Length: 155
Image (tube, rainbow, N blue to C red; front, side):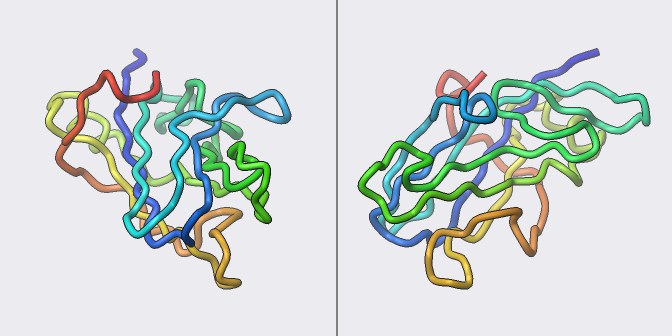
């Protein structure tokens, strides 16, 4: 049975004056969602994804922001030119892994709408520019209070 799962990604300490967005779609056929310009605060992206149990009895994710193969699902955060900031020197994407989300975590959030699954990821890479590639180290997902309305999330 498919369920909807609320997710929140906090991008911490990104370099200033760079646009970031969620990616909807794949390849060169994508649109940007929730575009935000970095400043002094963390950037927050919220979305919902569909989840069901896969053939291996592990969660499998789907939806307009989900990328990758069943064993390696992730969400892209687009950066600079990739996020529609065409005068930016940056053209990057950051992979936010969905790995590590357990069936127990899914059950808790779907049973209690006051909860959301959240992750915090670094916004700045080793080169001082926006973080890109797969988040490393990735500290995983955890249960957090759902502080926003579901109408502001991406389907």
